[in-house]
Length: 436
Image 1 (cartoon, rainbow, N blue to C red):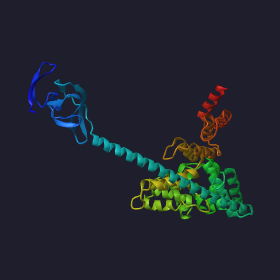
Image 2 (cartoon, rainbow, N blue to C red):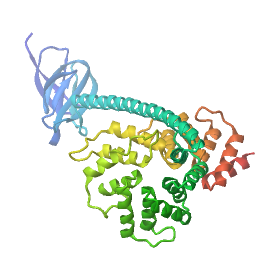
Image 3 (cartoon, one colour):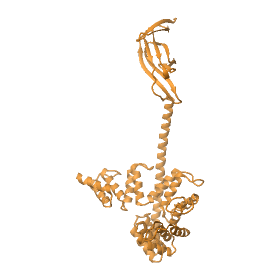
């Protein structure tokens, strides 16, 4: 069949001519101007040329698409579904839309998002495995601490002075046994009565850590006179902060610390190591030496006789692994997390409560786990931590952590927390009482 020249009249009345192959065709005039010019034209997925142009097309339903590249990964697109009958004519004004990702770029972005999600899931799984490993290791060490402590208790009751100090330390730190400061003071005092400088320093430390500085000072002086390093350390701290009736005197404090370090008191070594790392109360009083500081801290994190004497050293080491240390320690998030979890388990009631909050909220790298949060809250509550007690009330109030809703229990825990000063729990008590 030979092409036939036909005239097509658009709705606007404008007439145009071109050859068509058969009578079953229609015609389209693609019009564009400005940035829309030179867009590639497609009809039913087939490229027919660039805009502007006139085109004979088979009559019927058709999908028109115009595309123009915009940068490396974007394009501007115009799309239209239309119908043209036999012999029909239509003018299509191409108005490209705003830039959007090309199909290839969208696919690449999708693959990237999927890879990111897989990596996040793998990281979550790995983090949970690290935490489980840390907990298992901690539980094994606590069992060992209990065995050491039980043996020390038996020897202490038999009159062994060194065992008295060791058992008192277990009670003071709450490792292997529930923390019992009253019991720790009693056993430290029994050792002190036998002339033990470590016992005297132990009594001083209980008073100092409880904020009873005036009572801590005479015991620390006695311990220092007996040549005990911990006694020198407490005297150092009293002078550093001007507590216990002594004037604040950093020079004197540093002298006491150096004497404690010379006696290799582990707590004094911790403060010294922190200072070499440029941290803590004594930062600026010693020339920085991060490598040496790391070496000192790293030797303080292993348990001795079942005891982690300085849980804070674990926090420092965790931070060092988190950031790395030039020419000394490679950054290792996994080891950092493992050490940090252990440090929180071993820490003060406030640290244990804080770890419980992390589990409750699923924050700070911890998986959301109400049962684990409740376990930690109960540990901190055993030491009269007001916020932990309030959290337990909250769990009873809302039936979380594997326990059923129990308003009577919730009120009892809220009231206990309020008595200890929790403002939030005072509000919670009022809410429950009004609801009765």
